[in-house]
Length: 391
Ligand SMILES: *[C@@H]1O[C@H](CO)[C@@H](O)[C@H](O)[C@H]1NC(C)=O
Ligand SMILES: *[C@@H]1O[C@H](CO)[C@@H](O)[C@H](O)[C@H]1NC(C)=O
Image 1 (tube, rainbow, N blue to C red):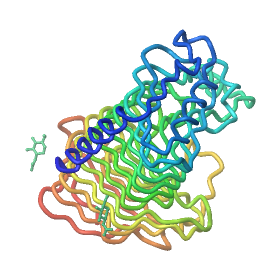
Image 2 (cartoon, rainbow, N blue to C red):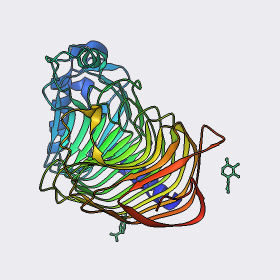
Image 3 (tube, rainbow, N blue to C red):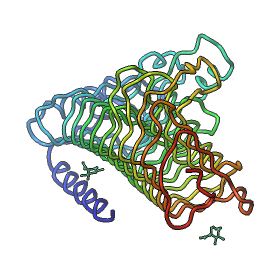
């Protein structure tokens, strides 16, 4: 989709060109201090208010330096439909994780239209909270998502880095037409719940040319994600790209029309995964294309798991109601770290239907033959099929 990329760049150039000449609101002019110590939240909010209240296209500018900020709430609606938030510096979250730990979000864009976020680093300093969580203490807060975009349309996130989030790095919820391009996500492999990009209840989200190394899912796709396009993403470490977990609720929106192409997985727990809880639900997955994926030492390269039960705790152990159909795997190759490279463990009540595998070539540790495992799954294969199909 070079054309996609081209369009995105043109859009950014146009946005930037039109907004730089219009009102620019520099957070430093509102009292923000780039010393990493002074709480600059109020200055950021004041700059946003000015940009949002402007009748013309406006830019919020964050210059170089480290800015300590607590929860930022960039709420719409705004009086103009073209706000650029240009970040040359780094936003730093308070190191005391109780400050944001119960706030759900650190930086939130809510109810906005036509916002472009360019550049910048978000450093959430999550290590303290991870240590609390991994110690098994019950007193740890859930943690905050670093960048959340909710109930918004026409948002672009371009060239942003997110490091050491407390919880998810980036989350898109209840949106239409969001483009996430050239982002870099970094957290250690053992940092809990630090999903790279989470998308749910949204349509027309595109994630392009990004690098995601983290402790949980690279990209996680929740209920109600439709017309989602993921291309050119390098995952690892982490848990891979996952549709789900789904079916947690009895009534839930389905996932449809998802394209995942040109992706690489290095040393991840999973590659291309669909997961659902083993309990009744009206959820579904229909129309997924996984195309052109390279696996390097991935524990479960291709997996559909409708008996999802992390840590084997509190499992419903019923039958999943999630209906999975029309899932295609094309040109998936590389190495599995375990013998079972392909695993389809589907619902007894609603077997997976219409799985198509074409040119799949996965080996176990570079040379040994891998195997495939199917329960309640039906589909077809064409071209190369290694391991031998279990349909
Ligand atoms: C599927 O989603 C893509 C964007 O990811 C969109 O271009 C395409 O039109 C959608 N297809 C259908 C049938 O809605
Ligand atoms: C499968 O991949 C292996 C390792 O890359 C390669 O040597 C082999 O030729 C491939 N097989 C086919 C049938 O493409």
